[in-house]
Image (cartoon, rainbow, N blue to C red):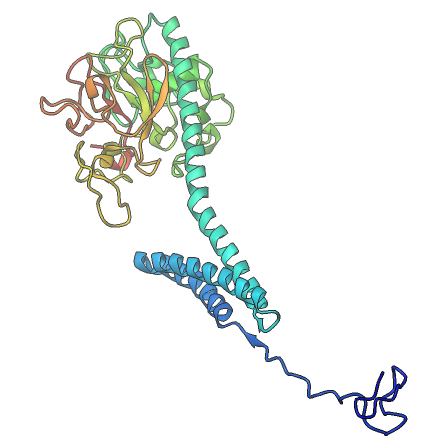
Length: 384
């Protein structure tokens, strides 16, 4: 190293010239201080990520839709700001921090969006699963009806006698014979029978089990077990109905057999509805007020359903009903007017619009052989 003052050659590591004693190297200057700051965008993202789920669940409790929608947009904004802050931090060469805020915020949002997804999807998935089980029950009932019809001259199950009338309770469900069970005269005429007692013939003669008549979506219906009513020494096929309260043990409606137009596999139209979920007009838990087949407007309140859905069965959120047709296929129908010629399967035709019809009562009858009228026994304290 040459001295810049006198030109003397000095060792490379010398700091002072050996000749003139001049300083050969400059002392290090003051170190530049780098100021590190936390990203305000990251902080904003973190705060919004905390507020959004809180606002959403508060909206769910209070039933405020606008607040729920706002919370979702807030969560999306928090996610966007989090991404922007990560880019900012990455380009700052260590001058900006805040990754911890972003990481925690994104974790909160991930949990929030997951809960929202589960809240939306799981009930729907469960609903579809219940619908499929219910449809499977009706398929089994349909197969049993074919077996029964094959043994009884193509006629579908009909309890009682030739001119038995429909009543919500039979004479004696534990009777030893048909005469006593339905209160028939000795010549087999007269008497009364329930809708469920006709279906119960499938248990007696077609080897179907009582649990097949329960829709899992109907929490108030339970499988018929004779032991519940104090009978423990007989099998279910020994009886004539689903106990003393049949409406509690049968979830399905059935085309009324006590009428001039009972169904037959030999002579009835294959498009006739045979059985389905409960008739909403005979189900106290289902509100049919305001039903109109062509009404697409939504009602307010907790149900928030369209006017035509007021005519659908209750168990499947009024979205429709599983229906068994005479050709033995089962389908989930979104409207109740799914019979022959758009006939409403839950009402009887009163000469007006066939898709609307008139609500049934115990004494109702189909208008003709193409008028499906699926009914079920109302609760004993609600019979009409």
